[in-house]
Length: 220
Image (cartoon, rainbow, N blue to C red; front, side):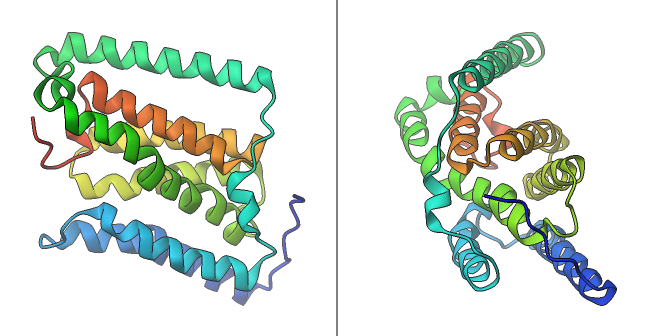
């Protein structure tokens, strides 16, 4: 897939920046200030439908992109090491600074944790990766054409959406994770691979005892 961006006139670029801001900052702010909103995850499916409609109408997007893999073994090993380091860091942090929360969800509700391990990567992580990697790259590549621009835009917006959990810890963790996943996507162009990484990171977060920063009413 070639990175071919349409050269925009200044008015069109301004419109695209405005659209970007409304979607990636306006919607999270709306949810943040709406105390009656049920749960942020319920909007993933309608947002994905909207995104696929836009991508099919305005780009050469193919649904085959969603299952593209082609990841070299060296990349798998390198990212496997990154995941292991993340796990050790999260375990260390929780054990030292929040020992009472260590393995909180698996201890309190092992069946819910097991269900989350199965459904989270498919129904949450994959959808988020399509939104914050594929859609952002495809739709806004013309205003963020450089690698560093895309990675920052993807990481910051991914972090900002977690404002809906009302805790800076979730935003800090997702800023780091978002920048990492955006970098992997830029290099591999595989949203399936970043979704796998995202899913595994999410399972680690909920497994070690940091899930309360991403689940407002977590049953522990």
